[in-house]
Amino acid sequence: MIIDYFTQICLAIKHLHDRKILHRDLKSQNIFLTKDGIVKLGDFGIAKVLSHTKENLQTIVGTPYYLSPEIVENKPYNYKSDIWSLGVLLYEMLCLEPPFNGTSLTMLAMRIVKGNYKAIPKRYSTKIGTLVKAILNPDSEKRPSVNKILKMDIISNRARELLDEEKYIQEFSHTVLHNMNIFQQVHQTDEEPHEESPSNKPAKKSGFEV
Image 1 (tube, one colour):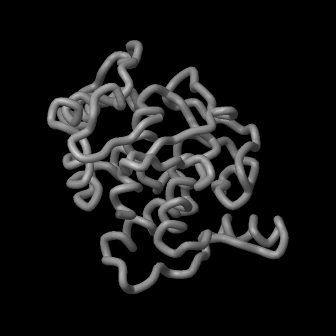
Image 2: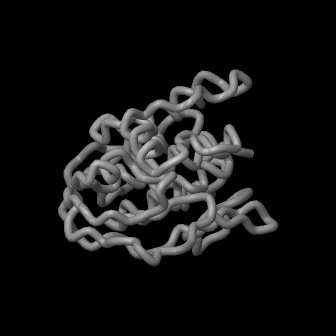
């Protein structure tokens, strides 16, 4: 069930990042679940549309527990900051507590920057542990994009179950981010992104909405 919810959140984030949108406030309070098991991502009050795919931001926004190391250190940040928050969400779902905590904001900030957190329980697979470690990498350059996360076996298999074949091909046959087709690995022009929402059609078993 955790992988189901996490995959849906990843699909929603992919939909945003493909359209050059940073959410900037990913946290459990902004994740909503319908009675049908459909995850919805909400609260776009501080979301930011990038002018181009490589743009960096420096405004400090978001909830302390979910802040990325680069934001804590007041460095320029980009879509990889959303990925960090995504990792915090995954850790919370696995451990029922945030990966970073502290008796003060200063202590919390230090732990976030160092990237020190307790290992997830041994009942979870090595693949899940590897995924958490990759996403919660303090070095944003080494943090995977949401497209890379969705290509991991443990996630991609679930994504195929969540989306019907037509919707899966539609969502994964292109990406605005980095101007690169993730299937054919060919350069694309910086054309206007496809505006159809991935929630327009019902999913096979479940789905996601932005």
